[in-house]
Length: 117
Image (cartoon, rainbow, N blue to C red; front, side, top):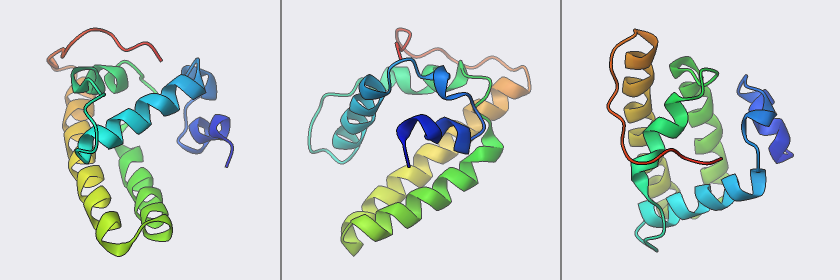
């Protein structure tokens, strides 16, 4: 799949990400930090970066998780896939809470400086 098509698959315009190369680098830094292989990702920007995008909805998360699980199982050793899937599931739960609050008009805490996708 081309990265520009990723957004279309999840129901938001692929131009919501202005620089896919920079965005993918940010995703790599996230996963390296989440797996404790590196410390290059500033997690304070994670929630606001996703909450700003009205096109990202909690009902999309099960689809994202299904694709993530399948990809991890296909590309990773069983133990590594299990670790990555566990992180993704916890991340999805956190996002679902934040997105639910956003969509209900509740205040969602702002963590850190704005992200620059």
